[in-house]
Image (cartoon, rainbow, N blue to C red; front, side):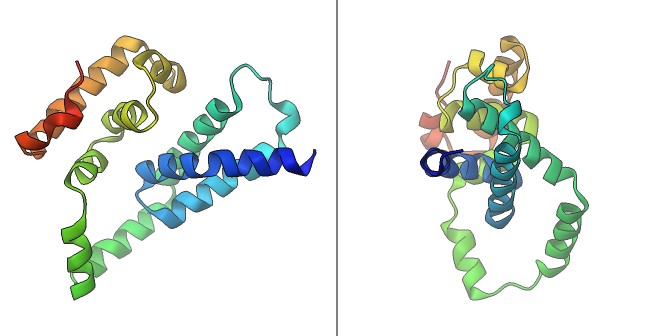
Length: 169
């Protein structure tokens, strides 16, 4: 275990994994916790890594799984209830933040997880449908179907002038 190797791994992949986790859980603090857990688990079990895929593919899969676990957790559910009951208290700052949100990002984050995954992995990670299928353990045709359905849902929410992002055929 040489420190430069681990340090390089952290600096190279942390941001990417943070973004992936955030796109699932929609909370930066939770995403940071998830990525930290992923790296700790990887460092603890490094000897068991079979190198059947690249390290980044393995870390991405771990991050996706941890993010999904978080969405099922008691912590997430209680946070959602707290947010629901305190949401009626709005301040000028929160109104400004809401106005500054990116409409496309909000629309993507509002998609159901099964549709959100292919969109995020295609546009953000620049993976092909085949690579997404391998990563999610799905047939390529299922990935394509989910991507197409996501586009249809997004087109209902996003003005026509902003469709440039969604023009994949």
